[in-house]
Image (tube, rainbow, N blue to C red; front, side, top):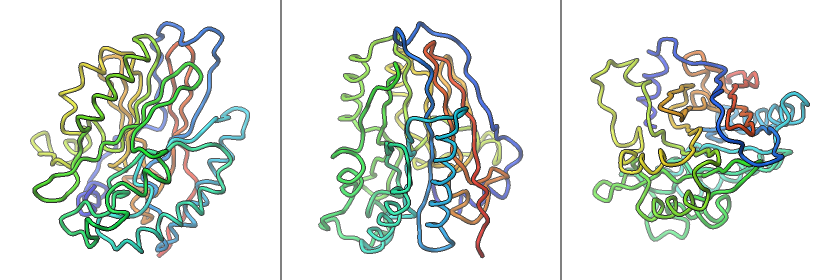
Length: 315
């Protein structure tokens, strides 16, 4: 998200965030004999050497480990929601590689497996202000795909009777070179096939960095405020009926650095705050730096709670 816009949002917001969200509408059992499980969701980490960003990431990892190990909150894995590093859009390739090395340095301390989602700041050079040539070996999404996406920028997996889909919501405007929120045609074809194999009763969680829906901007700026192509996934209307045909219980996202929940039909859309808060400059409208804990149950219900890690801003 554009930094100037997010600073404005953080300064002008008026009480919207919720710390604990629950979806209790039961669905058919996910799988015979399956048991409840939990996972962590941490988005917008924005690792950087400045402002103690690497120390903040390590402190967050330590808190994640404590939550994941405690009997009452035991978690099986972490899903990241994108923007893992501060920025690769408008910096040189050496700077981008440095940020990725810092991200890895902190991640090494994590005691549970991690699954990663790509964010706009994780993409090298997709900006009208880019300084990296398109001919550079690591231009675009290559670093993420090679190191964190098992060779791809989107994929799926199953766990505990639930199906997880990690999407790539970062499109590119060919005219300007800037990123936009979009699920491309190849990915949509893959998604349709993936959901067809999953079936219509298995509970599904989608993860996308850029949200499908948000009311946060309208609350702050007014109902007529126009969202640009970077704020939301612009083509969600084209595939929403595909999602409605399946048992999509939860869509997790980041990008806005806020806590927000929207319920449409049987699906909840949750923006999960931000590990970095306001890029390690403090909370976003009172929402502290933190991460989510999701408990999934066999009947398709779930709970979401938000956990801070008591980060102190460095000036």
